[in-house]
Length: 125
Image 1 (tube, rainbow, N blue to C red):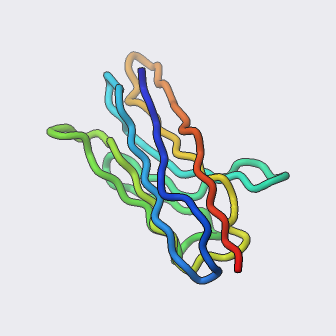
Image 2 (image 1 turned 60 degrees about the vertical axis):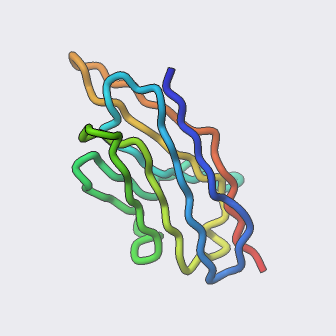
Image 3 (image 1 turned 90 degrees about the vertical axis):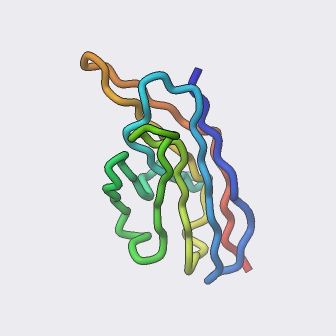
């Protein structure tokens, strides 16, 4: 059973920094990409940043230059196990629940995906 667990959220003042962590366990096929999404009250969930097992990253325009996504591979594999989101120069509009998302390697045309439970990030003075 695959588990996705986030940590590192909290309350920070505008202009401050936070680092989110996400760990995946229990995958039999390997995680080929992971991402951070966020959802603010009354808004749709949106992609924040993404990273593949090849190290390719992608960011939402609203966080480019402020947020950095990185990852660690599972021991002796080319697949992801942990992903991090370093958030700098935080703004009140970054306030949201941040979710970690993991996609397993495709096997015979089938791929499974998993969500974490979310971690609250609040940017306020």
